[in-house]
Length: 349
Image 1 (cartoon, one colour):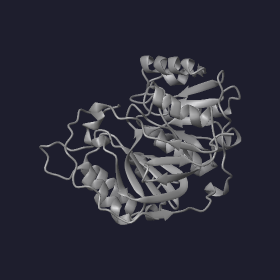
Image 2 (cartoon, helix red, strand yellow):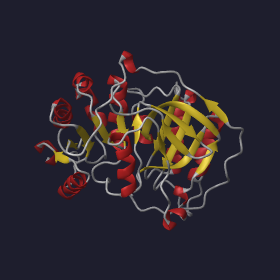
Image 3 (cartoon, one colour):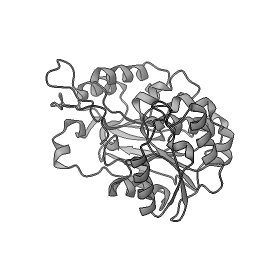
Image 4 (cartoon, rainbow, N blue to C red):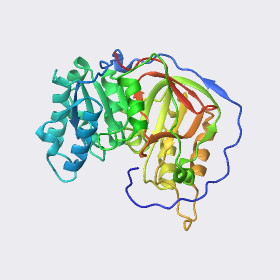
């Protein structure tokens, strides 16, 4: 699990109030009058371009990513831009955007994997050539700060991106398997099940799985990091949540900050119109026992239950070791009873 600081867990608050199950369905959505774009199915022997559109990646982290890709049967490739350092970024805004543009434009690159997240993607959104992406759709993978790019690409071009492990975290059987079943061995319907919890995770209240509001939902998948979802508000790339299944996670944020960000979404134009809410593990977001405040669960249930939208917490994605992949922009179904997310169409060609 990625951590920004050491944290101490506490017991969760009272359980979610029992509500009657509800079902919400969606209508088809076409982003900015563009058709949905899907990259080609990946196969062993394909070349995967590594990029660092935010924070700098260490030489050790880069080699780790390359080793993992080789074990998966891919050929890793990166330009010299990825090994630069510009403050806390991997390179300047212009160079990071240029690297992304080049990876999409290069016909020898079959898919793109972000080496790491961090911060910086919001700074390059206006420097990206969306015409290149539209004309060269490819599998694009990442999470955390990459939330900005995944949802921005979808909004601007209709590209289906993959919210999944970055190069430095793609190192466990569960995460690799969940990614492969979407981009290498795709099926028309893929049921995403949660990973088995370790004993340590079972004792950590942040990993507790619970239903916030029971029911079933159908809709197009969007979302990612709560912090980055909120950072898009007021920009040309703000997410329209109408009839969407919204996936949300975050890391190392105090409950009051989670409260503030959820409140901002709720007070916005479209969040109340979401079809379903799928919350991952909010790693490092629980309170200290010494703090007189609300628990993470109390904040989440207080903010989200009144929306009466089918919602669950604790799905296996986020800043955790077992991080499943979900495609942004494709249709899916949520069952709160089984705590499963079913992808109902192929996410690649």
